[in-house]
Length: 81
Image 1: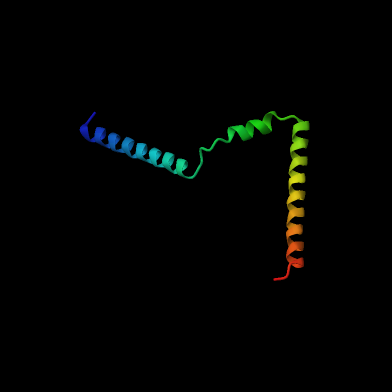
Image 2: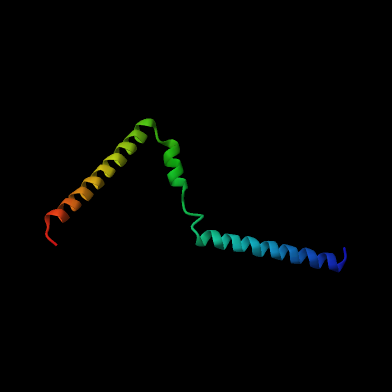
C-alpha cells in the first residue's frame, strides 16, 4: 500500500468523522435527542380506557380555557376604559 493511498484514506476518514461530529452537535443543539420514549411508550402501552380518559381531560381543559377567555372578554366589556 502506497503512502499516497494511506494519506487519502486518513483524510477521508477524518473528514467523515468531522462530519459525524458536526451532525451530532447540530442534533444536540436543535433538540433532536429529547426524550420521546416516555411519550411513545405511554401511547403504545395505554389501554383504550386510559386513552378515552386522556381525550376527555383534554376536552375539559379546552372548555375551561374557552370559558376563561369568554369571562375575560365580558369583564373587558363591563369595565370602563
